[in-house]
Length: 255
Ligand code: BV8
Image 1 (cartoon, rainbow, N blue to C red):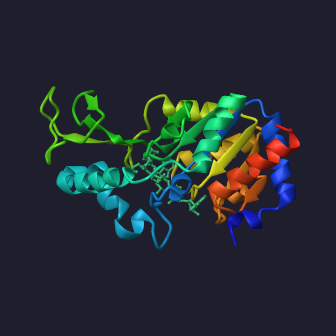
Image 2: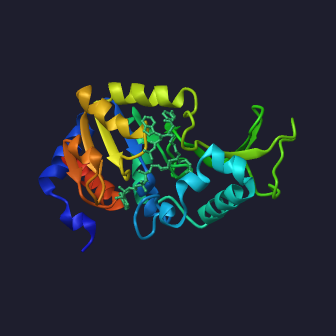
């Protein structure tokens, strides 16, 4: 049975009415948003990336200092895997809502760039991008990493280049976190999609939005710490849930 069948019509109508009335919408997405495009999540037991790799071994500055080749190998594999995936209908619905109704910003923990590829424009990337490399010593950075050698050096200063993502123990990109907190404080609807609510400070956005009086809707087949903060929890995959919300909104608003 598709997860859409499990969606409660009353909950869907409540969310669709919020979507229709909201002035400012913040959509907070995690790895579950990309799961239906075939990008492995981090913590799902059977398929999660962390089930095969220990994050402390690979997604930390200490890991890179200890063994940059091994860390680069992991990131190369993940970047190569991205060439096989496409945004799904859920990504495209969020991009359409941004076009059709405006004032919709996505704050994502994902580093795969799928929201941009689906057409979303106003996207805050809290944890950086897989398709960027940056220098460990100066402010040089580059995209288009196809011809990156096995020991990528900075052409400006000769230091190692590193993946352009935020590792555990590192500060988030300047401005990104402040903008995310501002959006959480000022939105009147927050959709939290496909995150286990474990990684801080991203996980705190739902609580900030709820405390500021926004309606908080969680889309996740599982319950998470965010479920206790959310006013509505839609226990479904993000693609099915977003298709159902979109259809309900269009029916109610006769769009
Ligand atoms: C920082 C980039 C200042 C790299 C990643 C309290 C306050 C501040 C910091 C901390 C704190 N407590 C601990 C910390 C330190 C740490 C942290 O949070 N640790 C955790 C593990 C406890 N935070 C940091 O270090 C952050 N920096 O705060 O700087 C500081 C520093 C040190 C100490 C104090 C302050 C930096 C964190 C960034 C780490 N980088 N990624 C890379 O990608 O390689 S995090 C990584 O996990 C990804 O970005 C990923 O997005 C993120 C979170 O995971 P989720 O997105 O939630 O994915 P997950 O697999 O966990 O869950 C998937 C969910 O989807 C599940 O719930 C599943 O049910 C659901 N799902 C599955 N399928 C679907 C679905 N949902 C919908 N539809 C589906 N089809």
